[in-house]
Length: 174
Image (cartoon, rainbow, N blue to C red; front, side, top):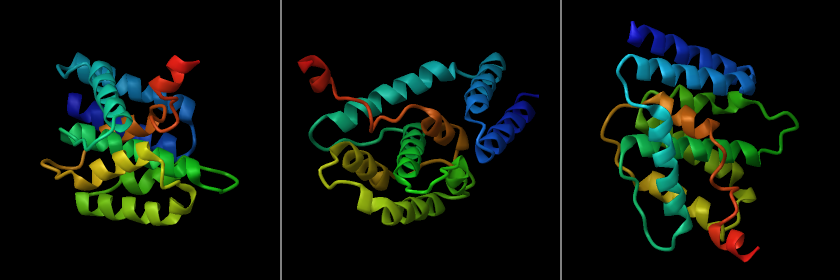
């Protein structure tokens, strides 16, 4: 039962993203996580909060950092996808631009699509954008151990962008 509910919920979320129903997507994702937890899975809200904090620390610190798990990798991919889409100059930015990443069947396909989006939007990314540079470098350097998992990609995509957060240093100065 849990696997069926999870699959149905994931498909509903992907369809909502494709149709631009972002208000509903967040609620649907939370419902999917609640079902997963109810059927014996871990509390995904806590898990993604932990991953988010780790990534925030990594992209805001100087020096080389590495991604530590497949789930952290996929969450970072979701963050990159959302960032790329935010750079689009299209009049109407739809979330269907993220579908190639949600539907990727292998890490090679995922990496190829990330490179394609980088080539498409790199004219909008400053070379001094250290957060982007650190995140993209960590994603490119990560060796995937398991299979593609869509949920953490969607979670990273739906979350507020780590790239647009004001840094702690700036917050302390104000």
